Structure formats: C-alpha cells, structure tokens
Image 1 (cartoon, one colour):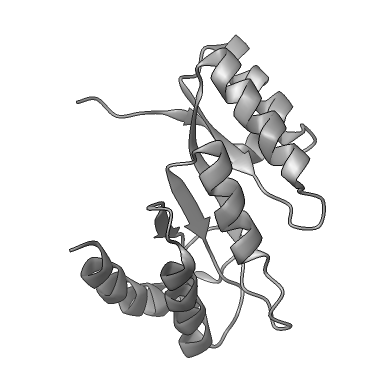
Image 2 (tube, rainbow, N blue to C red):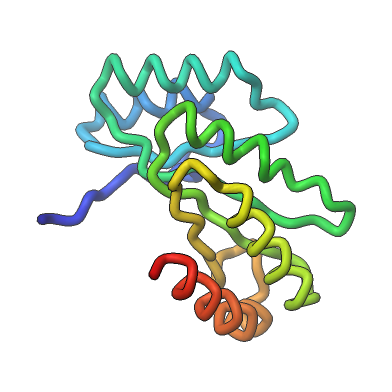
Length: 150
C-alpha cells in the first residue's frame, strides 16, 4: 500500500474549504487537508465540502486544527462533528498552551468525545506550538495515544 499524499490545508489560507477540494482536484492531488475555522464553519460548510469531495473523488485526509485556548473555546467538538460529516480520516491537534498538563488533559477529553473513529493526531513542533514545550508534551500524549489505539 502506497502513501496517500495530500494538498495541505494551509497552503491556500484564503480559499474556502469547498473550493480547496476543487483546487486539489484540478491540481491532481488525490487528497486534501481541510482548514477549519470554528468562528465561520457551519453545517452548510460541512455539506458543501462533502458534496465537493463526492463530486471530485478527492479524499479528505485531515481537518485541522484543534488548538486549545486559555478561555476553553477551541471549537473541538464542532470540528469533530464536521470531520464526521466530511469523512476526514484524521483530526490534527496542536497547542500554544505552556501548561503541558492542561494540553494533555484537553487532548484526552477530545479523544473521549471523538466517537467517529477519526484519528486525533498530535502535531508538535508546528509553527503554532513552542518546540521545547511540544517535545515534553508529546511524550505524555504519545503514551496516551499508544494506549488509545491498541
């Protein structure tokens, strides 16, 4: 089985999610990452993306990102529901929080809410998370994730 490559969600930040599927299709990509903005995403957005995926045959490899916030409004539950509707295989999770325990706890809570069999992938070392903090938090998340997928 070969690796599935996708057009990354962040390469065209001004393109709407459904249009990003079309961009990927026209460019010959078999899969696409979908950028989720919890402030603007709606049920209509989910339906439009799903329709475009069906029409083009492009696969939604992932939807991103869940970024825990200090105020607790990271839209994770809304993102998980959108992932189920569009059929995204993975959900990307990163954090800007300096509190590693809080980051890990949020990851675990989100994992418990993810009843749609989407893999919740920790993404540390990304532009949005401090690398040193991410490396330490990754060790905690890696142990949790291993247990979750066994």
